[in-house]
Length: 301
Image (cartoon, one colour):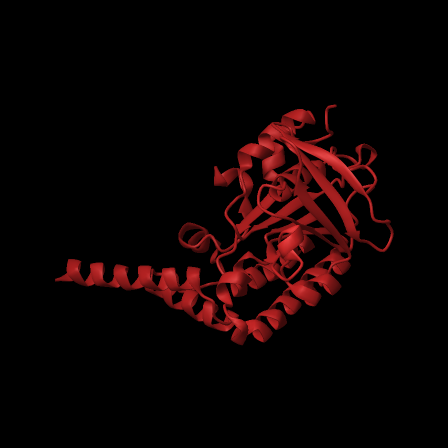
């Protein structure tokens, strides 16, 4: 009888865990879920929730090693600190690969074009691969274990959880020096959590608050914030002659919140093209780069 009761309790807890992962719901409700599940598992005090959260939900930051930009067009001069840089493009355009490369290069000394700081990575698509960081670290002569140690990684499960992670990010930035904050992708979860035109207003308001929180982190701690963005096909009358055009998700909310917008598109083979769409200090320009085992590199003619 006792064994059966435990099985029923475990099943209920598992269902609650799945609800937490697949939301969305307000942050307060997320906290209530975690409190309830934690109490059921014997965690009466949530002042030390990290072991539980990492084990069951992975809702907090962890060293990337536990998860088992050079080449970027030089006309940028690097990723601007204290502001938000947006990378948007279709799949396989190089957004995530560029983010992986930046996670390594931000750890380089200042005299080598780095930021001498750690990187923080919020993954909404499940595409982060620590193995790539090891390959890129070899290229720059860095110790792979140290590189992974300096990358704080968290998997976001819904939009409210994604916003909640910024609070933990702020507490970590108080304790140690971070040079880079990456959100890949900032809009992926919004496309699934908010569906239909009836929820468009709520989606845009939630997105605006999230982007504002990101900008506050950039202002407060001087980090370079890089977000990736998905695109949608814009089918109208002109598409009959020129084919469907693509535009980034997020509308005017995203356009106004980001300081620099870079559009990525696929070229021939492993070649990619990066275009400056909007920047307060750069004119519109294009440059080529390619993706190799070593990460993002210059195009070899």
